[in-house]
Image 1: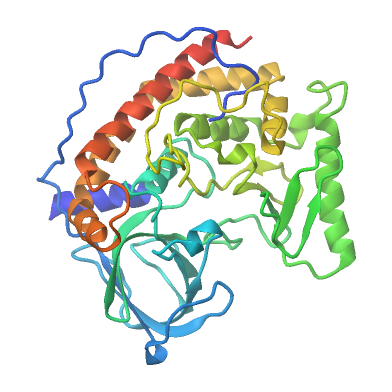
Image 2: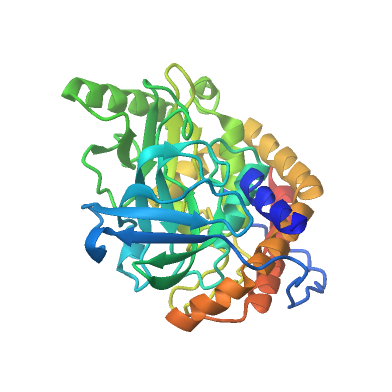
Length: 414
């Protein structure tokens, strides 16, 4: 029992894009002896979320909530949720159109789940495309290891909706501005760069044509919208200024958190920010623009959309000279700053020496904890591979190879 609790508390408490050029030569990756087996000493009965909609009505919309009741059987993990009134709707962009649907819960009253800060809004990630059922959880763990602000906690759960078992999900926090989540204050700003460009309040930035959407605050006037737009574009002007980086742009932008953001995304091979997609930037009033919170790693970890497989390793930088997508253009600018380059070298070396092994251990624990849930999930959806031991092994090998790649890359930085 103690071992099971320790695993979940680890998930809750702990639960990279290279710029410009890639290395001209790569050192050979040492032989990696990873075992394709799971630790059966780790408890494999994860919490179970039960949702019953009023009248058993189906959830068919991302826009319209349905009234419901939710309970969680923590299976010896404290959940603090029993027959709570809630509303539920679909969520996601492309993920909403998969057979296995993701959902958003809005409780009638604030509640703490699994000891997390109280909130009404919670998310159930379906991970239909990610047949490993681990990618978002492992990426969030890296974000927490790097002390990236507002990185989500991930708890693997089973979900039953209206008496029908739906498989393995991840319960996590909604991306929202509030004191217990993205704590940037009432006057703070949360922006999202995303080529979907589908929010009500949005603009294409003047200098780089970035697809910027205003997630918070709620816009109440044209003057408020124009003020937020102008403030970002004034910062953006510094990035394309001939004096960059010697023009004080760092007074408006957190360089260290940018480096953390790039290292994370490079390590896990997340191509999404090149578009960009799900790329958040937040700012407190009179504070600096800061990358994050991190979100959405379904297409990371060597995912090949055509082959529908993960861990297809490519020894390549994510931000390449030849890549002219909007996200790539934005991030490549910062690697022209020697201070950012130095932060990158130091941060990566410290992370690899002090945190990478813990990440690989976490993968072992996470995989072992969902081994029974994974079998049940595959029995329903039959998508991808049902070989969790090999997926766990391949994920660790993939990350070791990416780490080796970054080692070589930083040798080329000046």
